Amino acid sequence: MSSKQRLLVFVGIGISAVFLYLSVRGLNFQAVLDAIRSANIALLIFAAAFYMVAIVVIAWRWQFLLRSIKRVPLWPLTKLTCIGYMGNNIYPLRAGEILRIVLLQRDQGVPIAPATVVTLTERIFDGVVMVTFVVISLNMLHLPDPTLQSMANAAAPLFAIALAIFFTAAAKPLWFHKLLEAITSILPAKIKAIVMKLGDEVLAGLEALRTPKDLIGAIITSYGTWLLAAVGYWIVAYAMHLTVSFPLMILAVGVVNLAGLIPASPGQLGVFEFFVTTVLVAAGVADDQALAYAFVLHVIVWLPATLAGFFFLTRMGLNLGAVRDAQALETELENDNKAVAG
Image (spheres, one colour):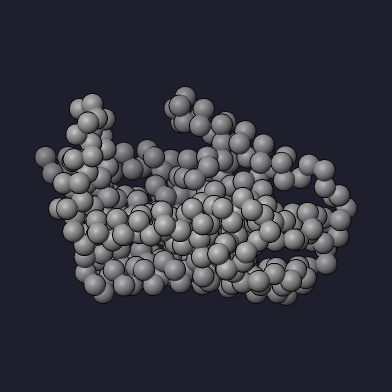
């Protein structure tokens, strides 16, 4: 690990520590523990199993996005998706994303470069879904917090514009390329080159979306997987004896996943708890109950995918060292591919 990467790791741990402190300060820890102990264990087990269904749907979306490169069966993609989650949950710098791309190349022959671009496209889809969830749920809930309502009112038209740009880029890549060239013409040459390269990579990742079947499939599975996650959030809330609406769970999913952009420790410890608690408290849930729910929910989200990912990794003859060495494996495979091409 380079000195820059180590610095990023320490910064992420520090950010997590700050958010964790903000989540727990001033709370009655005995009340939090009592709320956790009162949870319905059977329902929590069911929620954990149910959450794995959402992971299968995420793998299904990955299949749609990869079709322009290669048709890969769903089961291998599901295993790699679990491994990716496991890597992200236990190791910093989103090593799981790199590892699943490397293993996709090793086992399915999908080149690393286009697979990486597809991964970027996945993040774009997730961002679109999360903003949709936040905007729609805030306008449905009418929470008493005026700041949240102001955000909803301001975000709605911005979201509509961003969504139009996104699908225009998918349908008319040449228009988007020319627009990007016009916008970046005022930038210094080096910065313009970086922006244009990134824009072209995004357009390459959107290649699959120009096939109507794959576009519709990617949209349905993107919204479907996160709606399933929201149902999982709702089941955990019911197990914790919280009376909350489904739109509030949709809001929690959107806010928590957008907060994932904040650099933090593996598994978003602290950040997850802070934003889940913030959403529930804004809806009138007591602080101690909200924090207890956040802790339990985090375990439900974190544990099944991590255990499944570790199981599939060992079945492939690898161990946790593969997660740590993912970056080196990626470089090695890229060098091998260049040597073959040469």
